[in-house]
Every structure is written in structure tokens, then in C-alpha cells.
Length: 543
Image 1: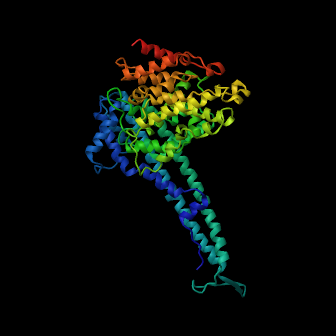
Image 2: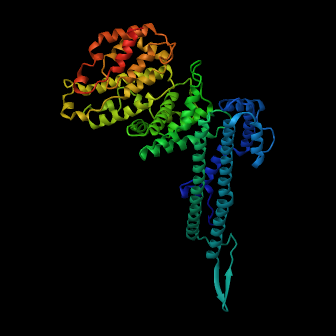
Image 3: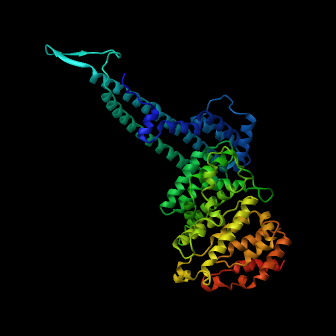
């Protein structure tokens, strides 16, 4: 018998989209059966938590104590709202608003899942069956022999065993109806994608509102905000935003969950180490960066704040800080514990590891007077700018790598200012020289790990390299020295000077007095800005 049927997988292949797969993945992400239990947990937690900041923590405790579902059906409509209001009595307006946003988020998830599933069950499955039936019916019509007797049409109907084999007809019919099914699959996929994108946009908006009310969307048993799919949505939105010019409002919008995660990791850092990420947070972090690339990170860091309103400048800085902290969390195996089964960890690291490579890559493969070198240094500067805004520390090994990379690239970029070594550089106009600001950013990031900075600055070889160079912007160097010569962050009043590091730094400063003062090749042929570095050195001498 001729082959007329086609599978759903074949329809998706022909359509170049996967509506059935999309529906399965989205339903798995939302898990509507579990959503009811989660809603009840938050209803109870809202009545017991002291404030919005405690809500997620209390919800987690209740979920763990209950051990899962209690068998009740999901409260719906006015009943859910009524119970929430009753349980919130006495907990304040903010708690009420937080609970309502959480309720809206869960409703949006449930409603979207129903709409997406309905598009499959009530439309695409029906159309798929119709196309299969129509293909079979047409084949029957076209292969049964017809003739006229006395002006009346007569048809010879064959059994399947006796039917003439008409492979060309069958192939043509199958191909055509497969095409019809593929068109329906494309329509369904477009409709479902639009619904899901609107849900993700709405969920991110609710996340911003909840953050302003003091609720951490990355905590608690409700993991809608930290799903891998939400991570990819945010990263793709950020990438598209940067392609279109980098609207600060959208930059902040797409990095909101990442920023909330970093804030919570560092919430108790004044009295304790940064906390480790949960499994869902770690997966979100890795999925987010796996969807980005080095050029995207550079573009974000290189977005200019000049000319922006104060509000937009703040939004941009928040977005840059969120992504910078994301990099630092990936570089801290105590915060983001490596999971060998994580599908995209290596892809996530590839988004920025080219900036940490030493003695290879375009900065070392191209001469300092080349356009390729200047482009590579510009991208490196953008990456460094992100780390300038970071607050999360990297682990010891990664912090050392950041610091070593910073010095290596600074030494390489300084060759632009040495006419005795690279005389051809000075055939170019001075405006062609790109200043290295990225190394200061990497040093600032490395200094977030204060123990590592203490140790590095106690090494005379390291401090000799650090202060034997001139810096177009010494803010990052000053930040690193300030953190690395105290036992606690210098912004805290109880910061205590770490003697070995201070002594090594001041000895190197004395050995390189001219460079610290701003004299040398870079000062002669380029730009040197050392006031912040000199200020921190003067402060060390006074302590």
C-alpha cells in the first residue's frame, strides 16, 4: 500500500518549527499541577511572614515542612483573592501588594499554559488528523478506475492487495498535505510563541514591581522567574536591545532577575560569606550567559552614560552591574557550585573567557598599531567596565586570573606608547590609540575577593608590576589597592590595615616614584590619570 501518512516530527521538520515540542516544554516549565500547591503555600506564608523580605523564606519553610501537595484543589477566582486578603490581615499594604503580584504571576502562567495546550488540542491536532484523512481520500479517488456505462459513472474499487501501485501519485499527495500540515504548524507555533512571549514580558514586569516592594523573585518555592526558559528569554531580549542601540530601560528590564539574584547572594555579606546559588538559580545563570557571546558583553559595557538622563544612567548602571555580577558568580565555585551534568556551563563560560586568556587572542596576535588590536582593546574595555560595577567576589583562583590578566594586558597595551619599541605606531594619529580602561575593571573585580587581594599585594613581584605601569584611569588600581591592604572592605569604618600588603605596596610605590607621579612614555605620548591611585597611597602612608 502506498505510504501517505506523516508523523508529527515530520511536520515539525517540514515547518522548521516545533509546536508540539514547544507545548510540552512550556507545560513542563509551568507544571500546572504543582502550581496549586505553590499558591496555597504563599497564601499561608503571607499571613505568617513579618514583612515582604521574609515572605519567600517563610514560603520555603512551609513548603519543606508540608512535603508537597496537601490534596486540595487550586483555589480559584474570588475564593483565592478572599483567602489571601484574610491571611494578610495586619501585615501591611506592601505585603498585600506582593501577594497580589504573586497571584497574578501564577494566574498568568496557568492561563498561558491553558492557551498553549488548547492551540495543540483544539486546533493543530484536529488539522493534522484532517490532512491525513484528506490525503487518503484523494489517493482513493485518483487510483480507483472509473468508466461510464449508459451515461452512468461506474467505479472499480480495489482491495488493498489488488490496488495498482501508484507511487508517484502517492508521493505527490503526501508531499502536498504534509505542506498543508506544516503551514498549520507554523501558524500554531507563531500563535503560541506570541502568547508565551507576552507571558514572559508580563512576568518580568511583575518581577520588577516585586523587587521594588522588597520581595526577592529568585527565592522561595515559586521558581517561575528562574526557569531556564526565562533565562534564555532575558538574554535574547538583552542581545536584541543592544543590537538596536541599548535602551537603558530595556537593559534594566532584561537583567532584573540576574540583579535580584546577585543582591540576594550578597544580602548578608557584612556578617557572613556570600550564599550559594540554588539549583534553579545556577541553571538560570548558566542558561543566561550561554545565550550571550563576548561581543554582546563588550557592547553592554561600552554603552555610554554620557548624555543620558539621571534615571537612564542609573538604569544602565544597574544592568551593567547585574551582568558583571553574573560573570563573577560564574567565576566563584563556592557560589555557583559546578554541576558536571549542567548542560550549558561551558557555553556560559565561553561568553567571557576570551577576555581572560593570556598571551593569545587578538591583543597578542596583532600589532599595537593595527585596527584589529584597537578593536580587541575596545571590546576588552567593555568587558572590564562590567566588572567595575560588580559587587560579588570571584573565588581565589579566578580572582588571581583576573588580576594577572589585567597586568598582562596593561603591559601589552602600554607598548602603544613606546616609540623605541614600536616606532610604526607613531605613524598614526594620536587619536588612533585606544586607552586601556579594561584592566582597571578587572582589578576592581579581583579586589572583591579581599583575601586574594591581600595575598597578591603582599607579593613584591606583583606590586612591582602593578605600580611600575602607568594607567589612563587609575580608579580600578586604587580600588584594588584599597581593598587589598585592609582586612575588611575599606568603605566599612572598622577596616583594619593589612601590614604585609601595605608595606609591599608602599615599597613598590617608592621604587616607581616617577611612574606613580605620572612621568614616562605613556604620559609623554598618551594620557595618564593617577590622582585616585596617589590618594590611596597617601592614605596608606598616614595609617
